[in-house]
Structure formats: structure tokens, C-alpha cells
Length: 404
Ligand code: ADP
Ligand code: MG
Image (cartoon, rainbow, N blue to C red; front, side):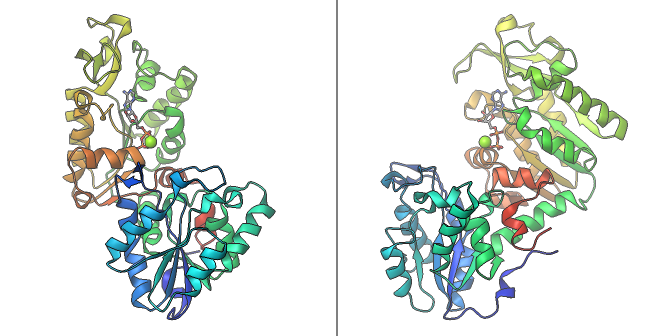
């Protein structure tokens, strides 16, 4: 069944429309350091405003402990939203209390209010179905319909994501619609050749994706911290690099499976080995089969793919028509170990087809390295949600909107 989209809700003028957005932005001392997620909600909000809906925006922010915590107030986000929309945005000091009800009652057609952080209420994330449902009922009293548009949380069975969508007439907003459309193209009928580039820090996090995409991809490229488990599976020594010993057997299975299916599994041929995990650490390039033959010996740490690997990966990416990339190739936060990630990002911008970046750190990396969002086909706003989608898992927040 297909996702219910905004138009299925009928005319919304004069109606109270709750928008479950993902406004979980990074904050430093109450100042927003990246407003990408706020911007991502604008198409849906503007469409509702233009229709004359009375818009009630809700979201979580950070991980408060089910109780009010000024550190995680959505007030600065509401201010930023007001600037971006170019109109006043009312702010309620609670989520489902007196302030929220007053703010909603005061809305006129085309007005917007933001209610306080959903996670100030224990019911939002409660594991107990009844507790979650009770909180969702309180939220439902604030609106006539729900537009679900927080893609970053659709893999969570939470009150505002799941239960509320069952209680009120509900549909997906434009952001969720776009994310699902792109990710579905990656799993169902990708234009070939299709390359999947995986990096980041934990193999065990990404194994599900590898398993699900092995039968679907033409090339799988492995970089980041997880590359060392793959090299160890080939019998190479990796010094003190990240290594998940308990995953070596599974990884061996993937290597064999890829060979059997004729999937090109492209593993690094060299890496940047460092004396320590530090921005100013000594470092040298070493071949994949000689990672311990450096001045640091068995104490060396691999912190990036090497230049030959970067070229190999870039060529494999550029010659693909569909590319999905998750996980930085190295410790990009330190300039000395950012070259591999930069080379891969640059290659993605040259893809003649669909290029998708998924994952929180990967998205941050491309922006930090000076790329702009429009250089890629799509940058997913949800790290965990996009990976679980590609793993073929059922996502409660999408299923409740009709997606199967
Ligand atoms: P994403 O958020 O995009 O899914 P991950 O959270 O899996 O990505 O991984 C991101 C982290 O992986 C980054 O902080 C980066 O420093 C780290 N990383 C990449 N390569 C290595 C490596 N060789 N050793 C240690 N950490 C690494
Ligand atoms: Mg991450």
C-alpha cells in the first residue's frame, strides 16, 4: 500500500493541523549550530499556511528525561522557524497543558504555533502501550488532523509518531514523501550500476544494511573504521585500528557471498596509519597488507583510507548511475584524516544519476568539508531511519501512514 500524502486529507482551511516535525537540531548554549532540519520542514509548513490551516508544530529535542528541562526547550527553534517563515510563530511553554491549549485556541487561519518539547512528557517514548496511547490522546485534543513529517523518527514507535497517527486522520508531509521516494528507488529498482559506499565507526551497526543490499547492489565499497574488520577477515594485521573481532566470521561470509553473486566488493588497498588518535599525530600511508610495517609498528592506528584507495573508490563511484553513501571514510573531524571522505564526497557530486548521502555524521561531513546540499541528489535527514529503511525493516511511523 502506498503512503498517504497531504492531499488525501482534503481541504485544510480553518482546520487545526498538527505537524509532527523533526526539529531536533544541534544546539550549543541555546544557539542553533545547524538549522538544516528546520529548513527541511518549510515546504510542508508553507503549503499548510497557504491553505489557511491553523498549524500546530510539535517535535522532540535532545534526550530530556521525560520531564521539563530548560536546556532542551524548543523556544530558540520556534524563533528560528519564525525567521525562516517570515512571520510570527507562537510558542507554548508546555506540550499538552494550559499554555498549549491557549496557543492553539488563539490561532487564526494561516497562523503557526510551536508547542514545547514532546519528550518533556514520559508518555512520548513510553514502552508501555497504554501510557503512550494516553499521551497521544492528549496531543490529539490539540488538532483535527496530523501531518507526519519527522522522517528522523519514523523508525520509533513513539506517541506522536505512531499512536497519534492512528487516532487522528493522518498523512505524510512533503519531507517524508521525498525521503521515502528516494530510499525506495534505492531498494526496489535502482538504475544500474548501483554502488553502495559504507564507512563510519561500527561494523555491527551496518551489517544489516550490507546483508540487505548485497543481493541488490553491483558494487560495495568499504571504508571508515569498519574497513579494518574486513582487512582482518582477509588475514591482514591492522595494528591498533578499530577492529570488531566478533564480526570477523560474519564479514568472511559477506566476502564469500559477494564473490558468489558477482558483486564487486571493493576493499581498501592502502590506509593512513597514525601514531595516536589525535589531530596532530604523526602519520604515514601504508599498503593494506603491510599496515604494521610503519614506524609505529603494531601500535599504529588506521584513521583514513589511503590515496590509492580514494582514487579507486572515486572511479567506482563516478562510473555508477546510482550511489548510496553512509559513513565517513576516516576521522574527517581531524583535517589530517579527512582526505578520503572528501574524495568520496567529490566523486558523488560527479555522479550522472542519483547520489544519496545518509547518516548524521556523513551529512555533517559533506557540509563541513565545503560541499553544498544541492551538489547531491539527496541528503537524508534521518540517519537511523534511512539505514533501517535500507535494511528492509518495517518502520512503525511509515506503516501507520499506509506504507508497506
Ligand atoms: P553516520 O552518522 O554518517 O552514520 P557513523 O556514526 O557510523 O556515521 O560514523 C561516523 C564516525 O566514524 C565519525 O565520527 C568518524 O570519525 C568515525 N570514523 C571513521 N573512520 C574511522 C576510523 N578509521 N577510526 C575511527 N573512527 C572512524
Ligand atoms: Mg553517527
